Image (cartoon, rainbow, N blue to C red; front, side, top):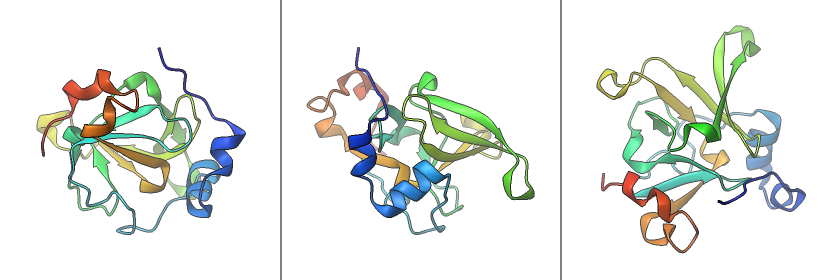
Length: 148
């Protein structure tokens, strides 16, 4: 079983934007994220810990300006916390092992797919294409990845 954790080495490799988003609870500008328009099959993992978070088959176009997913690929890898910052009440999403700020979850997602919209910053993610998943140790998730 892989072990995922936050290490000083992983933090040191982050770009300034990745650091701001994951470690300082930042948000990238809408429509600017690397993965907003990505339609390739694969999985999205935490940029810090590598823990698997979302599958491309659960990604959808929400029009919000950030990559959106209907559910986590591994619910135990996603922590949901009450967030009352900026004069709003929201549910923050963090990676469970890396403790990276990922984004927020809302209840306005596709009803036929559970009704949730995980609105995630690209800066907190690393995309692993389907053809590299086995080699990178994510072969157990291949069945959850479909062509889009």
